[in-house]
Each structure stands twice: as C-alpha cells, then as structure tokens.
Image 1 (cartoon, helix red, strand yellow):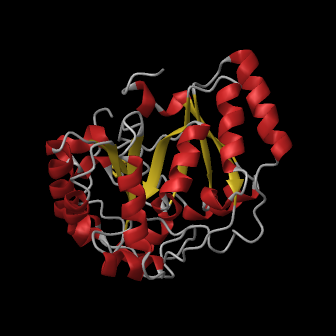
Image 2 (spheres, protein in one colour):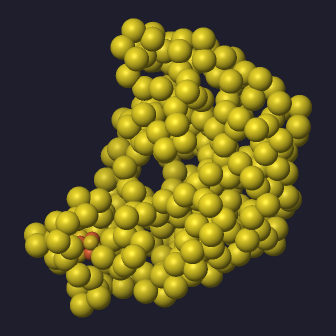
Image 3 (cartoon, rainbow, N blue to C red):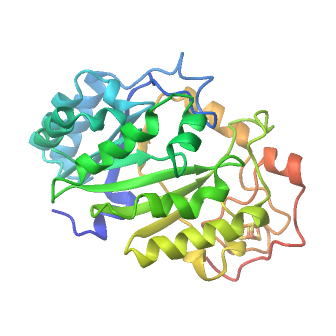
Length: 304
Ligand code: SF4
C-alpha cells in the first residue's frame, strides 16, 4: 500500500474516463457542451490498461472518472478487476450523491474502491443546489461523504470549483466538512471556461478571491487537511505558493477533449519570459478578456 504522501503523488496514478453522462447540471461544468459526443474509454481499452499495468507495474493507483462515474452500471466490476490486476488503490471521481445510499457505498468499497474524489460546489444546501441546479444534491453529497467516513481505510478528497458564485464561501466549505475524519485533502480549482470567452460570467478577479482562498487554506490546514490549489497565479499566493499543483495523473480520454481544452489559451502572462515558475499556468484568454493582463500585480518568480 502507498503511504499517505504517495497517495497524493499524481505520477503514481492513471485516470480512465469511463462515463460521460451526468445527472447534475453544474453551472460551471466545463464539458457540458462536449459530453454528448465525447466517447468514454471502451471496456477493451480498460482491459488493455490493466494488462499493461500488470506487466509493467507502472502505476500503483487507478482513477475511474468521467462526467459522473457512478452512473456506470459496471463500476463495481471495474474496481474489482483493477484490484485483481494489481492496482493497490482505486479512486473514483464523483459528485458523491449516489454514495448517500449506504448499500451502494458499501458495495463500491467491498469491490476495492478506497479513495473518493468528491465535488462540493458550496458550503450549504441552498448555495450548492443553486450551482448544481438539482434540489437536494448537497444533502445527498454530504451523506455520501459521511458514509465513506464509516470505513477506516478510505480517504476522501474534495474538489471545489471556484467561481464568482462560490469564492466567498470557501472558508465555510471547510467548516461544513470539518467533522469528516477521513477527508485528507481539499482542492480549490479556479474555474476556466473551455472557451476564449467567459460566456457564463463566472470569472472573478484574482485579488478579489484571494482573501477567501487564504482563509480557507488556513482553516483546512488547522484541521490537518492537505490543500491543493489549481489555476491561480503562483506569484499571488505568497506563503501558500507551494500549494499550487497543476499537474494531474496521466489521463486516458477521447482525444477530441484536448481540442476543446486548447480553447482556454493557458500560459499567457506578460512576465512569462522572465518568470521561472514551472507550475504556474499564467492567465487564460477569457480571464485576460475580462480583467486585462494584470501585469502590475503579477511578479515574476525566481523559481517555482
Ligand atoms: S508572473 Fe509568473 S507566477 Fe505570476 S502569473 Fe505570471 S507566470 Fe504565473
């Protein structure tokens, strides 16, 4: 088994996108326009990955993902096969609602799923449900996380997408989950629109969001949680700049996804040539269109 530190090393994991349906309608969804035509990885491709990993022992951990992986009717079977082929850990990425049913949660854990990456959109039912556009979703997700907590060997990780609608709630998101003992890491993903424009007007200026982010980080760390920040200028993070981790596990996904992803136009910054940060994604096209280059508040880094 991997140590707790190794379980957060992205190079130790591989992600397979096995399902592109979803039963939430999150306003910040980055793939809503592509879900209908992206193809999930086939069962054959899945079996090929298992065989490869069995032979080469390349990754100790497997992540089963997609839009909402718990809608895959063979999820337990996939997890069992992964464990039998030698994967030490199986993680699912989910909105967590279906884990609110204890029987289903138990079934997945019995099949070998021991890590749960759960999307939490906001700190309370009213705000979360307004973002997911499904009434009752917050309570089901929270119940799901409380169910995961019943098994000592499980860990959970949260993912909160930070937009104009959610950034003020970041500290309260940490408070709302303070009772979960197996919650090992909280991630704050700053929204990008998969477009050159902020069509849904969800972006907010970095400096406006920063105090809320910092308060959330301090609270999470006081609870013993690890924290990762995604897609925020590293030079603005000060004492928390080491928490910017934009790397991800190797991802098996329909190649069409990358065509859409490129529309973001990451890595733009007036200081790019002089900045030594290897982690920062800089600004993206939609952000620059809304708020300008912000070169006066961004400062090139000596190293990352
Ligand atoms: S100056 Fe460097 S760290 Fe700051 S936003 Fe630009 S690339 Fe990122």
